[in-house]
Image (cartoon, rainbow, N blue to C red; front, side):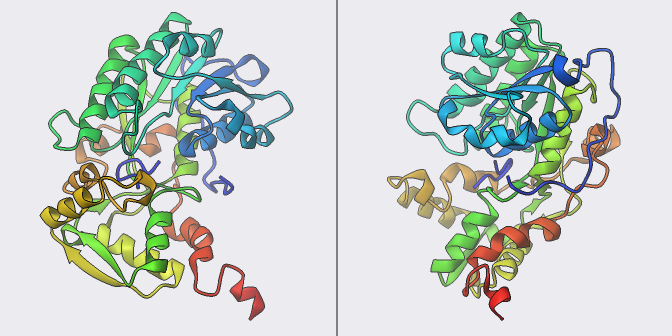
Length: 350
């Protein structure tokens, strides 16, 4: 589950508006070359889609480019090229950004695994990409962080995200940093995870009573914002906070999950301290099998919404040209239908 940035086949109905294009914008069409680190991932694939639609040539960089074949149908023949790059190996990063106009770093992890630690990916990896982008002469750099990034947070995820932002701005001062709230979409690890739990469990936990607030953003709208920044929107060296049209509590999100998946589960309040104990008890299990990590429980202790300061200063989604973001109700029911008791095609069988 991605608490702050929960990390497709569905296209956003909100069109991309290229707002505030400045003289730093890369040339579009066949002359614009963009490298997206994490291109095959949840956020990256939607950025690839939006950029391809705008005519850019794209390098989708990842550790396993052989798993990026699903990206190529999003553009014309030869428009999207998977390339190998590992953020822990600077030489591979440098090769991936040779001759580019813009670079997007959409790499992030929800929980550490082996050499893929929070520090290695969120801090050192972000620095390596920003440094290589500057050395390659890229004119625009977009870094995907998360609402909640803070050096004073008790969550290691949030502190490393903040450290990564600082590293990026140190290496590439003109970078534009995007901090989304929970990101939802067909491949998300929030609604899908809890709907899957509801299929096998009679109860779902409301961590901390379910009072934590979120402002979920559709991944297609985030992809449109990324493409807008590549095209010149946004003020260089600025951090933008991105959220969707609704602010909802964790309880309300669980209620909607159950409604969309047509599941009957009891919602049980779970104090933060007990949730942490349960997370510790599941620590030996693979990350994919764990409902929550201790770090994610810590993240749930803080609201995850666009700040009043960001709204006042115009550092929001609307400032990047996405004026009508998609709501949960217009997207999530479609991909949670598969969790219904009679299957996703039940309505066609009567």
